[in-house]
Length: 215
Image 1 (cartoon, rainbow, N blue to C red):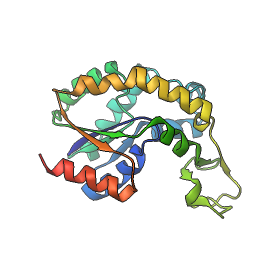
Image 2 (cartoon, helix red, strand yellow):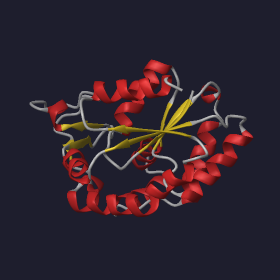
Image 3 (cartoon, one colour):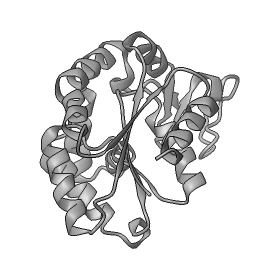
Image 4 (cartoon, rainbow, N blue to C red):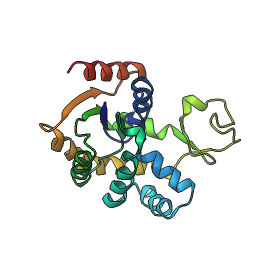
């Protein structure tokens, strides 16, 4: 099964992708995770991407397309994958279509997770990252903890620049202008499933699985 998870920043794509990856036994490919790792490793790509992401802007299409092409060509994607955070522009969507044809993997479903902007701002502003390993947590997950549950680092939680309210609002404006049109690009070309992202993680996941199974 091949899936594109679509939706605004902070709508819950990453959380749902991890659960679906486990249940469907296919890799979760997060462009955000790939970029954050590059930032943590201080690679040339990471340094360029960090400056762009801190402003709340989109990483250029050519960089993103190159990252995805390399990742989808790996053996673990042969039986399926979940794309989280890509494509974000029509240019990326067209490039992905061409890549999928090359890989003989043209059958893909688009899951559109929705939520209002106010809820998204509230969610993202409640995220914290670990300065050491880069993993992101909600405030609920780390309440009362002074050590990172992932790497054990002490007092390492911080609010990332691109999770600050003013940057989130800018990211949402960019999403509505540049990324929402991608959904229209896919309508009529792909199976598009729209799921309300408000509710518990389990409830949203169940809605996604039901929709995927009711072809």
